Length: 286
Ligand code: NAP
Image 1 (spheres, rainbow, N blue to C red):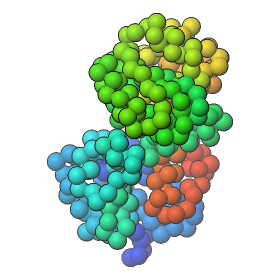
Image 2: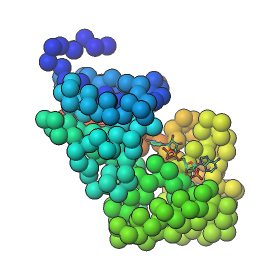
Image 3: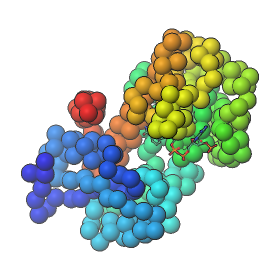
């Protein structure tokens, strides 16, 4: 590892906390090595109080850019020079590109999600989609889905008010029609799912202390015409995805979203396409 690093190597990095389990360094360094690009990517453990200093370091070290993860996605925004329209709408970034000292914030999470869905042969454009969650991942997915032509979005969240705010953001800024519900509105959930082609879990339910739990109460809420995605990729198969398989649904975990948000960032920094299949193999092998 690192044998290609020279005095001319350009640095990229990941800012956030915790970062030690991130797949991003392996993803990007595998791609740089495969394409013979003189870049190196490292993870930096940085808390919210140091957001401004971390952004300044991009200029000081003439880094080409960085990925930004929790808890810094919104905290770095005031220190950037400009934002893309999606990042502006969401108020958060996951990728920064440094063009000779001018720092632009992008959000590629939603793009990664939509790319992973299309990569699996699914296209929700012009159709209805249902989603659980109203946090950072949900916002990114909803905004990109709306920008990519999803016609109707039904957003369910434990905190209904947050779902309402997200629906309002979509309705005011895109051509998509969004509706908000509480996650406990079971009959509405059953109805909205029956009318949807795609369901996305963008909550934390299914991982860590909530492993084994699902945002969908019963398997019979699902139907075989529905594709079911989970932003979670650890565990690889959440309880939701097990239920979806039992119901005969197409399923996708969150690894594709990680992979393609990385591919989008890689393209911004290098102008080259990430060798997605090679990187996918490396990540799946872990
Ligand atoms: P976040 O901003 O903290 O939002 C958390 C979401 O989970 C909120 O909607 C929250 O609902 C909901 N939630 C938490 N505990 C819950 C519970 N006990 N019951 C019901 N809902 C609950 O987090 P985030 O960044 O959006 O991440 C959400 C998930 O997406 C995580 O699992 C994360 O690992 C995953 N993710 C994946 C990718 C990827 O590339 N694959 C990228 C980003 C995130 P309330 O609003 O009611 O609290």
